[in-house]
Image (cartoon, rainbow, N blue to C red; front, side, top):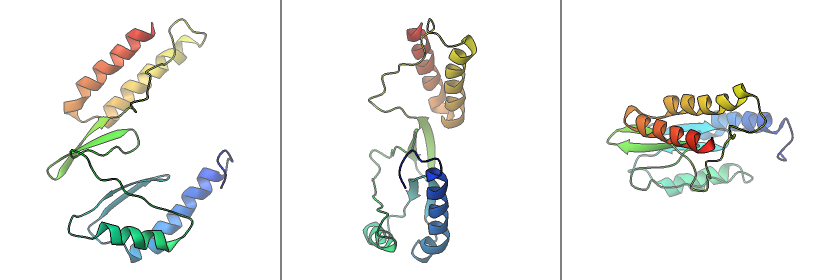
Length: 152
């Protein structure tokens, strides 16, 4: 479906739901974690299974959908706006911003209402609290304070 059409996300998500219920269980090993948000998938794959053969089977199910894989680098893999750090059998999350992010938000002296300007930063604090593991939270909060003070 074309981007920008209001029904596009809904129908794409419905299509992927059917794909995951009907086709995926036939080829997905039982000890694999598969989490999807729209078209982004986080798959935790055991080292003793053949990932490339699974990827070939997966791409053969429906020719119009192509799956790719990205390996972890230094036990980290970016997923949406989260940077999960692998620590043994567990994951600790940090908030992620692309390197191209210029940290430009609503300036204090700009036209929007005061509540709108404050909601930008309150949403950033809420995001940090929900995403970041305790050991990364204070650093993320200090980043948000720095961003806020540079916007004034």
